[in-house]
Length: 129
Image 1: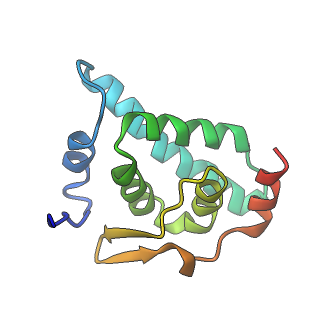
Image 2 (image 1 turned 45 degrees about the vertical axis):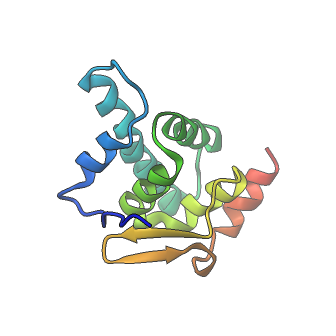
Image 3 (image 1 turned 180 degrees about the vertical axis):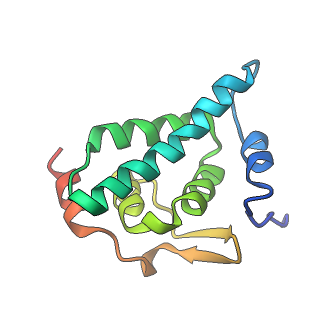
């Protein structure tokens, strides 16, 4: 069994680049794809403040991320960068059937996903799509 690298702010970009599945693209495409995580953070922050969220926009950003990054790595990157928004993130991942049982090596720990309380109101909205 191979050892996995613990994600940190210092090694995040290298980890993302190693798990980027597109070839023959420039730095602009890579940066644009990574910026989707920051956009998700803003959307989730706005949801916490106002209760409003564009569900389809969030789904679109998540789908693109899963299309350009290895799925396991994408889970780790999303959980690491969106750790303040796990209930919202996990509601979307559960709806999209992308929520793994656990996510390893997020900073100093792993996340057992069933221990995170999913945003049930948001998940109910998603089920109505």
